[in-house]
Length: 408
Image 1 (cartoon, helix red, strand yellow):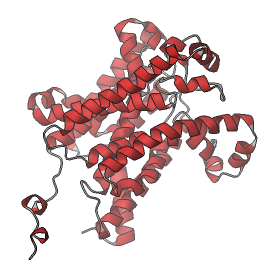
Image 2 (cartoon, one colour; image 1 turned 180 degrees about the horizontal axis):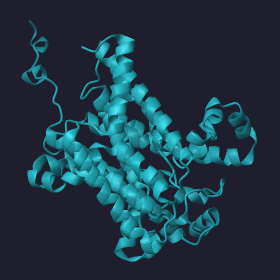
Image 3 (cartoon, helix red, strand yellow; image 1 turned 135 degrees about the vertical axis):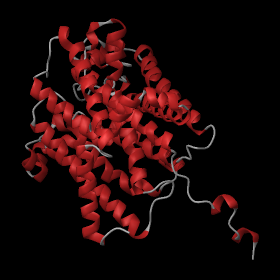
Image 4 (spheres, one colour; image 1 turned 30 degrees about the vertical axis):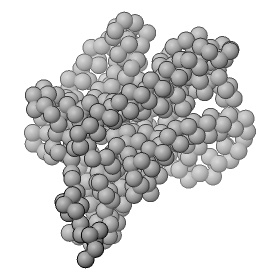
């Protein structure tokens, strides 16, 4: 037998799976993302100034980006890691992801009907899962190239399409014939892909980046530090590149102020004070990196922050039992992230804190955070999954049984 036909000891070993510490690290990152969303939705406005205002501003947009990166990581966990499942198990995994996507889309529109000021991102996540599903077989290096290409191209595409929507009537015709628009009472696919707060094309790079990280052998020495270093470099490139462009390109600051209708262009390299939806057709907007600006600079910067947080959370929980214990409330919150996300929007509506007075913002934020972590801790002691996580698990299990027979 030829030597190359004999499997090496490394090849003969079963595929490595994440340790308990590394899986807990993902929950810690999800918990931090949930707390960041609380800060963005009910916390003090960034105008309060000082360290508190800075922290509140950092949470805006970057928490959603962290969720999107974690969603990409979860997609690989669902479909097989490090290699995608094949055969019956692979088909069941694909069906499960599609069903999960449908549930997220339905939840997203249901929360939109609750009518708060929160821009709900769940429907976009559902669409992103389906769009990213065909990429599950790609290697980490290829996924990195896909994510980088999407980060460069998709913001330009969305910017151009937004200008086209504003300058023509074709979008109205699309909406009029869009079944999704009729069922949901929204602008349907046009809103999902172009005009909404979270256009699917500009959020695809985050999901693909998370898929790339999930493909790595995180147990190998040096891999997680390199992920963190790469994230830091992306953050510097995104935010730093925007700062340089705004200050070196002639007329950039004036153009951004005109595009946004503000006077906050000087902080547009990192802050949402410049706004989220510029006047279409103003190219100066492409120079900003505001967290919700949907530009290449913002995608690079936000993705970098997300990768740093993800890597640090996984490293910390994998190596320190003491930190895992200290972070138990946040980890518990992250383990029921979907339930916590939906619950906080319902609480915003029930408590009528859509626009609380600034003097009450910090107490409201603390109330949300403490109540959510306490409820998550109590639930985790008795149940393995959160209420909505059980719903999705039951739906995906029923769908795979119906399609393929009882799972083996």
